[in-house]
Image (cartoon, rainbow, N blue to C red; front, side):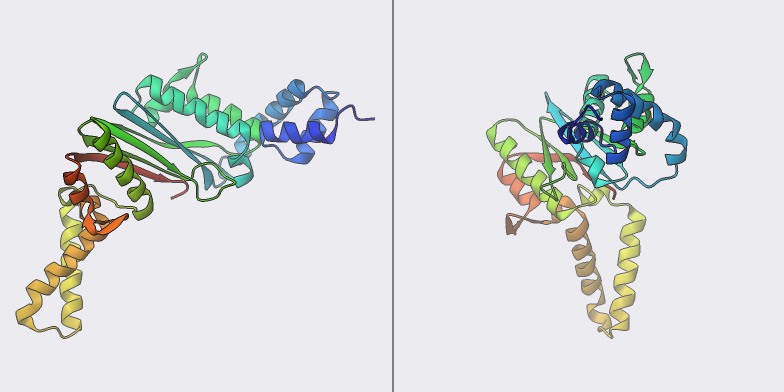
Length: 278
């Protein structure tokens, strides 16, 4: 007779993210010992790691931390939303974030090469993925510095960890700077800008938009005398969609983000936006 209960199965699934049958088999083999069962799940998972290499990892979470004017954000991916909300997966993401903060790594290769308990973080991630029974990857990292940095995390589903994360930095400190930085970070999460300022947009992309605008206007039969004004208007519309400072502010569409920052006495200097799987 099994010397474990349904509650034991549930608790172990929450800790590992493993499937019910895998948990039951491990508990049977471990004679009900939860810690030994975790070891069994881990060992069996490592054997299957190679088979998981080609699997898609479109689920996961975003985590971030700000400390002393430095913001760090990571995205960790897995295969299913079930694992994404498992305690074990969330704990792994917390560990990755802590390593990212403490190491000072600013790119993914440096982060994954950082040693944790005598082994590269990349190996730790593979081992934890073995316990979870899924392919787990650290997808990206961003590190931003500024006078004031805000980190905003947004849940697209109440049952899952944060799926969208934003870091936004401004020059300036104090309450007004903090409020403006947070409000704009929330705006970035909702409006998905790709560039901070017009100067950040690649020249070839602007020229492409201008060419498309002109060809479209001609196809529409617009008068030649008005062509320049029409084209520039459409390019301006492109900027308003892609450039943060040009966008209409989400909380007050009568103002641009640039105006909101100016009124707060600060200047936006950098941002990063992650959405799981995109």
